[in-house]
Length: 132
Image (cartoon, rainbow, N blue to C red; front, side):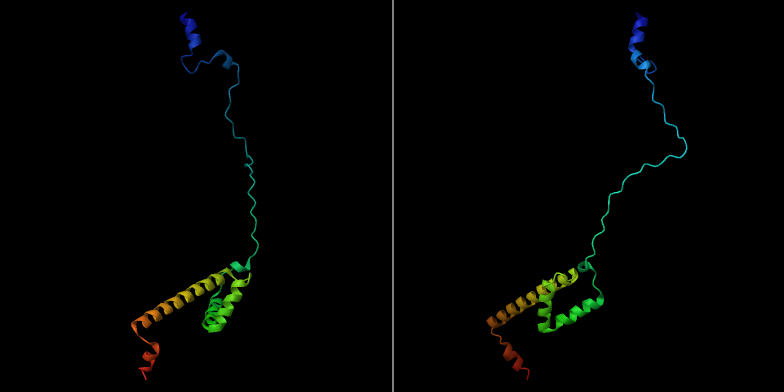
């Protein structure tokens, strides 16, 4: 009975059940010369179409914009033309928007200061004539 118990209990790992004895054991793969590396397909990269509105503006272009912005009526015409055009550079459009925001801020501050000066009794014309 002890012998039967020992055969059926598989106390150590060396013994295997009868059904597993007939199955082939996996063998370690041996390196046999050069093997082709696994090939994989790279994801396709699409080249973006050329967009001239995203180019970086040069220093000369910025200087030209500053000069045109300093001329009183021409700046408003240039702003309208550049903002409406679909071919205008993105940098130029951002610069125009920033210029418009700053112009609006200056006008609002000027109006507020004129109202404050009027409430306090200051007249800009009297201040200017007192210097002469």
